[in-house]
Length: 151
Length: 151
DNA sequence: CCGTTAATGATATTTATTTTCAACTACGGT
DNA sequence: ACCGTAGTTGAAAATAAATATCATTAACGG
Image (cartoon, rainbow over all chains, first blue to last red; front, side, top):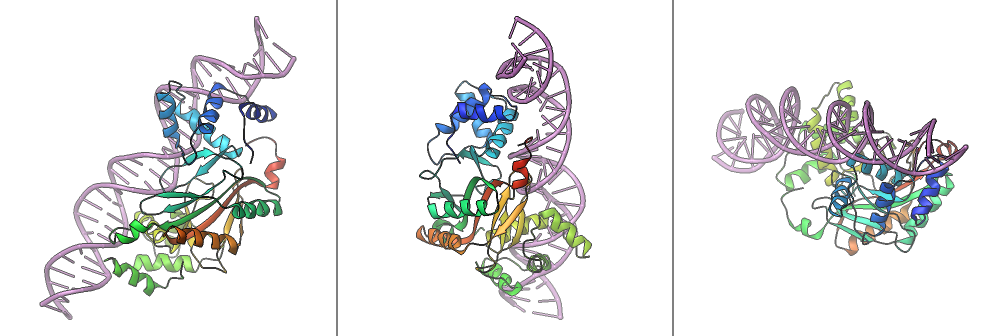
């Protein structure tokens, strides 16, 4: 789990016989400039880039989000909606987890270094190379506890 | 996070003006009798019940898996595949987390009570009612580290 | 500056999941 | 035990996220 620069991404791509492209650089920079706690779905990102006048095809976006998640550059989040969301994967002081209300999807981010340590140690013990470590707490928020009706 | 009996499920359903059905009891019992570490997708469960001669419609299965996950009876897992999987949600000594290879999807289960405690404390601090707490470690397994080619 | 080959992007396709709706049934009340 | 209401089921249709296809483009090593 390292902070990536465009040139670091390029180097790692080349290591595997792959190529750096303007699209990949745009996607990386977009996530790096996103405020903490902001995460985007593939469509969110597509819309955002269109607005900014640097549109990228949706299939290219899907391909590269998955690629960069598998490289450990992005975190792939499943925040109780029906689609995946992504955010940049930052090391220790920025690294955080999610407390999610399963009814209204309200999400609170929180930090906890001991969990990250557990994750790192567990991966190491099994010889796995750590990419991301996320604690997801599924719960019911105070507001939804009060509303009796829906589940 | 409690262990559910069919009658406890019935009671909680009635609290909300809902009904117990044979289908719901079948689904609950099926997950309770599943060996530890086994998780099922909606289609897996549908096939399994068909084999056992107690078929349930797929839409009913989808509805009740989601319902029981939102009640905290089942855990909804996202194990790097394209579909959700479910397992019974058991308390402390059985509670576990997942170490997942993002390339081949090989998954290792592991236990760690301190993580569960962090989850419980975090939920409580924000007034959330805890349903489930899962640490997902995304990593590359030793075998996939050796194979240079695909990501 | 080429040639190879990976990458892009518009489109078509797949597939998990949700919605619809008529028929059914759980269960509270009588 | 029997009704009536209203939640539930399930087959089929619809939705939507994600992937595959493939002709065109472009990265980059030589």
